[in-house]
Length: 188
Image (cartoon, rainbow, N blue to C red; front, side, top):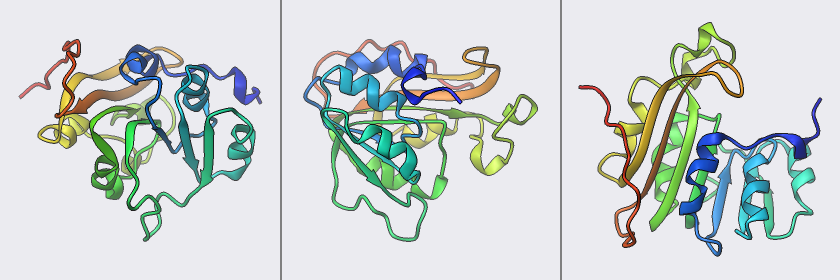
């Protein structure tokens, strides 16, 4: 197994990381091995890394500016009630019953960077369960009306390995500074 620190962050997250201010409070939701926690912590961004896997969280606990917390993100009780974040990063994770709750955590000027698997991925690898695969344009429809969409993509990628993905970057509607708008609207 590769050491956690050697795992490269998502190209999508890296592409939009500049939208997260250095003093932002960032939530790495379902942080997994912590590749994005490390990316933002190295940039001086305070990160709250949450996941169910305590083994991974132990690896992240000593990083400066990182707060780790073990949470059941799919339980009947929402463990993040009352929390607000300036930025939220989610990759390779989908639990539809919590999508609305997740949006509720984002500050009005915040940044959402989300990337996960799309239907069709079952032919290329894991996950294969449709409960964990987005439907076409699903992230776009979920975010539209709540946030200003900066970029949206979906389809096959070859790196880090062949996969069908859907990804979005969006900002709160109260965000004042200009954002490069190069989004791709979904097909009707």
